[in-house]
View 1 (cartoon, rainbow, N blue to C red):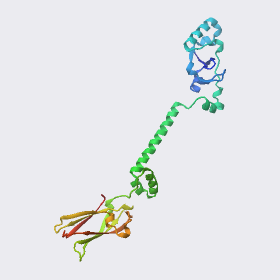
View 2 (spheres, rainbow, N blue to C red; view 1 turned 180 degrees about the horizontal axis):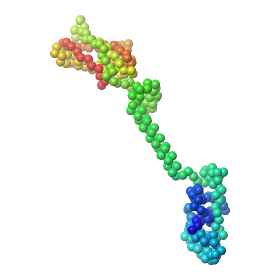
View 3 (tube, rainbow, N blue to C red; view 1 turned 45 degrees about the vertical axis):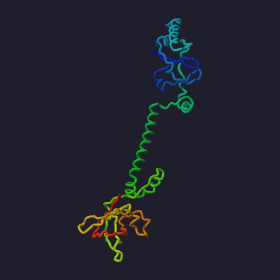
View 4 (cartoon, rainbow, N blue to C red; view 1 turned 60 degrees about the vertical axis):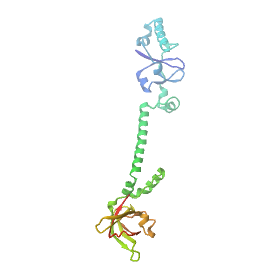
Length: 269
């Protein structure tokens, strides 16, 4: 069997081979009118003998055979002498750029799909990295302090902050003392020194002061925050630097509690 196709522009018929069809996904250029078309659209098959051995077949029989094919595929003037080879020179390296731009997109469908998958995967990867940076921004700033300015710029876009780390196990009360005003017995003062043993700055902790009686039972307690215990010259402090100490002072009214002892705890609310 032979493969025959039809130019939809000038109705010229061509004999094509499977290699020619595969060369450009079936796209050929008509040697008669120079129109570019896809040969698969009007591809039919006829007996090889009717083309290569045409003299052995009577003109009537050959004409009737082709007319039968014409009726099926809509070919108007299909005869033995009109069968010719398509002009494939248009698809040479010389004309490839013009052909791709002006006639049809020759990028294989599979290649297009692969590019889409690449773009989609890249977008998902960037989204995942953004989420990781958002949720672990504090840990990243601790592990790589030089990245904190970048993280702050990142948070400026997302309307978030990069807070200082909080590891209460690396904070310690080095010393403390509770003093009662000798003149005003209902006024007391708590003084203490807090040290940060971490290699990174930490948020100022809260302090929980519990007053106890002679049996060590808590009779009153209160939580004090940085604004409550920082001395005036350190009121703007936000963190304790690595391997540094801060001194705190808490003045409060003990009233008639008659507390004989106390307990002081560090905590992050």
